[in-house]
Length: 120
Image (cartoon, rainbow, N blue to C red; front, side, top):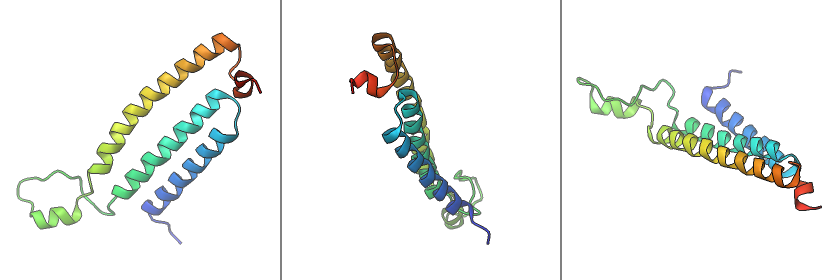
């Protein structure tokens, strides 16, 4: 049995989100928690890309001489790609801010363990 690309991408996105949720809830190290949150974001991005995938599709650039009916049936959907590009930029900025907060917490508490910082 050969799995098609869209199904494999959806399964991988689900696995990334599941691993990210597990890491964000159960890990104690703050850097590992941030990596887990990045996994959730990457899984969501992969899910959006997989939903915009069109098997055998063409790039969504309308060239002269193309029939508009054929183009609309064969072009991939461009909105998920734009959303993912925006999400990547926002995710990188958020990741930098979270890492900066961890540096401040490490200087203040001398640890990056969530249980030590929260005093449990």
